[in-house]
Image 1 (cartoon, rainbow, N blue to C red):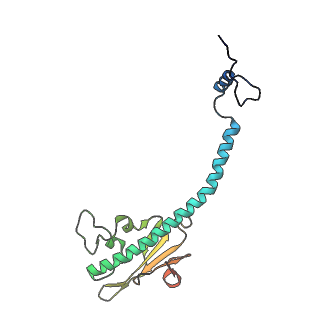
Image 2: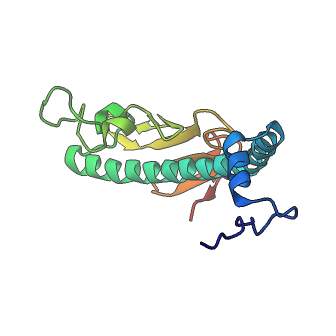
Length: 184
């Protein structure tokens, strides 16, 4: 019977038999501390690059949602005015009726409960100046959208009124209608 020489590991400089290399690999388990520290450092560098971009994306999404919410409020005011012959300056009046009640001027059911609560996607929505005639009919309205946590949930302030233009002001929603620029 012909006996073959032990198979040598092809990558080994010392030409160590493959069997002894396998034994060595079985005895060595896990990673060294240096290897783990390098992996952690790489993860931290990637996180340091990604987190600010994630925050910017979140702010942009919240601001887009705020503009959409103000456009929804404009449409809701037109619907409310068509139904009740007056505008309103109350989110509750545009919101859903409670307890399965039918829609009324106090709760018309035109907007969802989230927007009717006054807070949505990192922005809070409040009524601005409203004009009420001598007969008690609201003839104009303003809605203001401000970041709930400026710099974190949003960085710009938005507003709209009965002209149906959504405007933006980087500093405050109180002067938004006079000095704010229109949103595209």
